[in-house]
Each structure stands twice: as structure tokens, then as C-alpha cells.
Image 1 (cartoon, rainbow, N blue to C red):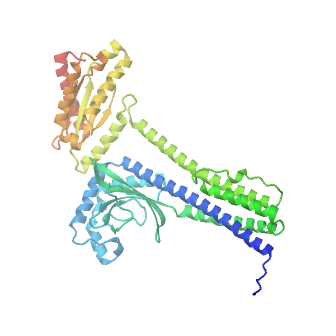
Image 2: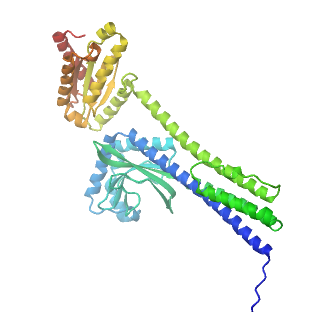
Length: 485
């Protein structure tokens, strides 16, 4: 019979201990890396989506549509589309020359400056807008806010899959790892006009720096685990049974329970372990506690960052709303009106002239205040504000003073302004005849409207004056008929 090779229990146990310790260390390192990766990925995805949505909310969809139409008109009329895969070739340069005038347009400069402002505020790599032609698998760049290596209007990327609108018109946020740009998280959000998608605003955030720090942390943790394993092995050669086997089983069970726990929260699994003796195993337990503590600190920091980001965003949204909203009615205030006037004057210079202004003045407000008190007077104003908003649903409503409102109508409301004014006056008439209402609920107002006329108006203020005059004429007529203030 062949004699079996002798292997001492010391060697066997050393191999076993080393294997178990390396397994535990690998599981711990893998778990920490996975937790950090998942939290970081989710945080960056959430941040990119929030930034994309926030920037879209600050854009004027009319400007975006104007630029989109200009770029797509060129794209749809060129003989051959040359994709960005041929960047720098003669054919590509000739193709791109068709878009030479786009960057000179005022609306392009306006939108690019707007994107760069938010690009700088949020500290992201790039904010840009695209339009997709799903039939040709083409993604057409409309504008790129990058300061360097920006894609010009008309650059076309060919996509087979990946960053692409789904059947609902939404773009799933993706994380990519490319040779040129490294690891990027990209989020897209649609720019809508009247329920239709005009373009997509996209945000790129580089994850290269955070990935390098993660790798350094994993390497450092792995080095600690190797050192700890060496200590455990030395103790195992002397105290095989009492000081190695039982503690290793305990640590193995602890690690197993740790891996089965929720990876998105702070754990105290290793912290609850107590060393029975003052030896290397106690050092191992202490090191694992330190490892858990450091990981908990990282998880806590990541969670705090997410909370701080959300809190900052909520505060920013609240401050922005308070700055331009009327405290009593919740509609836009005079500051917002002046900003809208400035924007309209710029649009007039660019050739946009389809808008109108309705001036609305509250009737009998002094009488309500004097007779029923200012609190009911406020109720009177709020009631009229609600009526204006209900009728002019797609228009911007502003409260300019105590008893004056202005409505700026564009697009659908502008085209249907006659019927909307008739509806508004009809609602007032209906309210005046409703005897179930209290005096401060029977809102009354005079409305005057004027639309922009190129032959008469040079700026928004001219339209405002004609609307204001029409309102006072309406008020005088109502006063002669009903004796209103």
C-alpha cells in the first residue's frame, strides 16, 4: 500500500485559518466596495436627474423650440448626414458647414449662457441639449454648454442602444465607462411645450475622481486584512482549539449575518463582539470594529451628503418661489412681471410678436375693506385671483398692486383670448347673481385687453398702456351701469 504523505496538523490548520481569514477579508472588502459603489452610483444618478429637471424648469421652452427648429431644419434638408464617428474628416467638415450660422443666433447665445450658469453652479462637467431621430438612430446636438471640446449644433451621434428615449419618451439615467471621458453618469429630461417634447436637456457628471478614491480605500482595506490575517495565523499555530477555531467560527457567522443585512444603512455587527483574551484575536476583532466604524462613517457621510443636497435644493426652490410669488394670492408678483417684460422685449427684438396683455382691476375693494374688514378684503382679492387663474390656465398671471392684476397670454391662450375673456366676464356675471354668496365672495373686476401690434407697439410697455386704457374704459362703463368703485 502506498504510504500517504504526512501533513502536520499545524500546516493543515495554518492553511485552514489563512483560507478562512482571507475569505472573511475578501467578503468584507467586497461588501464595503459594493455598498460604497451602490450608494455613490445612486447619489450621482439622483443628483444628475435633479439637476437636469431643475435646469429644465428654468428654461424658456419657446427659446428651446426656436433653436430646435433652426437646427432640425438644416438636419432635415442636408443630402447626407455625416456622424461624429467621422469627426475631422473633409466630409464631416463640409456637413458641419451647413450649421455655421446657428451659433450666431441670439437665442443660441442666450441658451448657452443660461446652461453655463447652471453648469458652474452645480459644478458638473457638461449640460447640453439634444434631439433624437429614432428612425435613423441619430442623436442630434442642439447646444453644448461645455467650455472646451463642445459639440457644435448639428453634430450627430449614432446610437444602437444605451442613452436613448424609451417608449414613454423618457431617457433612463445611465452610467458609462468610456476610453475618452472615463466613468460618466448621464441624465436626460424632456423640454415640453403644450404636452409635446421639443428637446432633451442632458447632464454629464464625471465619476472618475470618486472611483479613484474608492479604489484607494479598497486597497488600504485589503492591506489591513492581510496584516490582520498574519496575526491570526501566528496565534493559530499555538492555540488551535480554544483561541482560533471558536473565534473564527464566531467571526464567520458575524460576517455572514453582516452580508445578509441591509447594505444601505449603518451596521454595528462587529461592534457588539467582545474579545475573551488579550491576544492577536482581540486585535483582529478590534481591527474589524475599526473597519466597520470607518465604513459606517463613509456610509453616514454619503447619507448626510444626500440629505444636505435635498435640503439645499428645497431651500433654493423655496427662496426662488418666495422672491417672485405674491404672498397673498400665490401668483407671480411685480418683480416677476418686470422680468417677464424684459424677456418679452428681447423676444420682440428677435421677431416674436404673438402675445397679448390683459389688465384686470378689482371693483369695490375699498367698499369691502371699509364695510367688512381687511381680512374679508383679502378673501375678495384671493377669490378674483383664483378666478383669473382658472380661466387663463396657460397664461402667466401677475399681481401688480393691491387691486391690479396683469395676464400675459401666448400660444393657445393667445389664440383663444376672445373666448377666454367672454368666459371670464360670464363667470363674473354669474357670481354677481348668486345670492347665496357673501358680499366679499361676490368678486367683481374690469378687464381690458390689448395684443401686440407691430404698427403701433415698439415694446411691451406700449401694449400695457393700451390694455390699461381699455381696462379703465371698461371700468367706467361698469361704474355708470352698476355704480362700482
